[in-house]
Image (cartoon, rainbow, N blue to C red; front, side, top):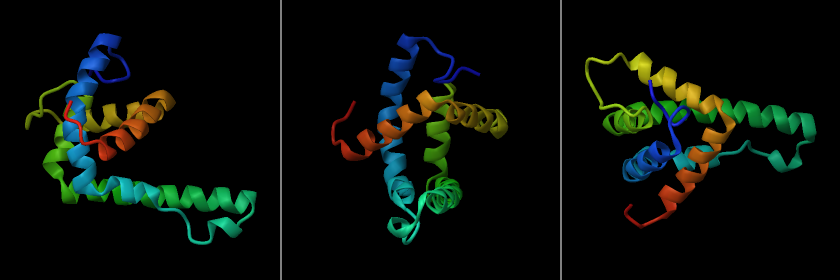
Length: 130
């Protein structure tokens, strides 16, 4: 399956433009920005290893809440975002595993993950329509 990981530069740019509006709407509807801003209580008073462990636990909680929000608050938007990320039309005949496998593979890549994080901030904070 073609994704942001294995496409050409021209395909990447064209698909990123297609992703902007549905991604911004999805971020808004699901509350993703708020979910990923959460940090452990008392983080400022923790030392290095304690802080790292607390941040890992919080990240796991945030990810679980993000998945729940995506599925519960905007299931159609979630499918649309996954479809655009996978260069595919949303299809009731395509197994969901295909989309999820491709999405999680993209998230393993630090460069793509950084792109999504920056694009999340950009999409959530922008009023421009691409």
